Length: 62
Image (cartoon, rainbow, N blue to C red; front, side):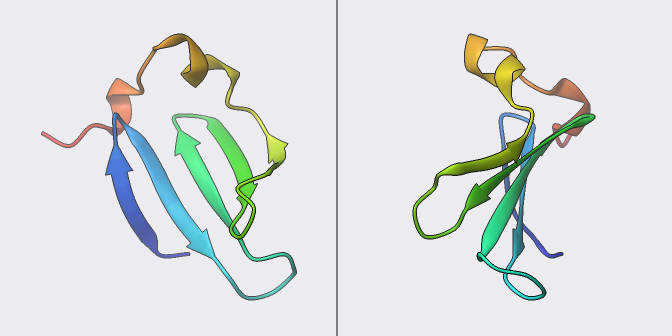
């Protein structure tokens, strides 16, 4: 799964083959949320901690 970008410690990885729908993973530490690539609809996983302004410092590049 190729890494597309990082911002505020959140890693975005694109997954477009294997099983539909085309989707991307937003990864922050041990949290992994999956979103539909076309609609941006949340599919599954956890991302609640990101919505309150906390960032994933363990994923920040130096």
